[in-house]
Length: 276
Image (cartoon, rainbow, N blue to C red; front, side, top):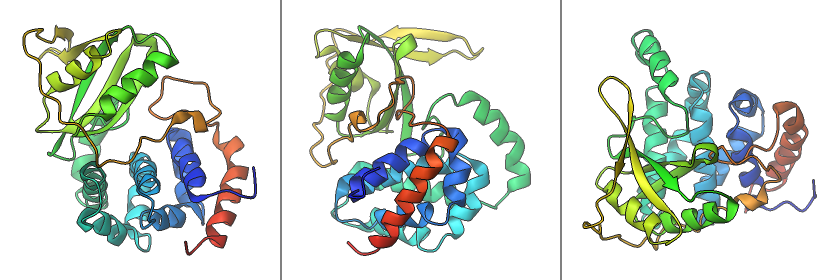
């Protein structure tokens, strides 16, 4: 690992490591990484802030992490600052708000929520499938033509142009994309954006009352107007990760055994770079 790491490189690597559920406990228990992510939430570069929020959201998926994360010095205050900062993009504020609400619940009503959470976790196959924030919802798309990395990049570009898209994850093996969006954004807008590529077509995947899947075609007659997103920082490219796995929301860097040496390097960088 180069000694000349910059903030964006470090936060991207932490985000990628946090994408693997096997790494999340170790990252939170590390003495330098969680405080470092909190520092990144106050960074002047909006890309760094957004990537740090994604990493924190991954870590908060592990229920055992939430109490420690909530109690970590500066965590809740930094999230509030992101939500209240006038220069924060709307999707960044929404993501910070979702994390804040999750951590606020940490330690409360644990006995009542344990059984419900266990059942809920079984239904969550991907990142951001929860409904903890009523201002956000999840749409599952089946995308014909989503065959390789170039098509995936084209799909990413199309989705990122839509104001109201918070995050998305790909399931390349089954040609699906799970998209987290604002509750006031219609799924048809996602379909229109994908169809506009001319090489891919999207359909919505829904579940019936008995749990069976149905695939619904978007009406060709209804071209949903798409509000172009100009505020959110440029999406963080996955080419920065050496991983070649493509069935995860953020590419997997490796096991926690492989990553611990890198965590130490990152912690040293954070110590040297306490002030930016």
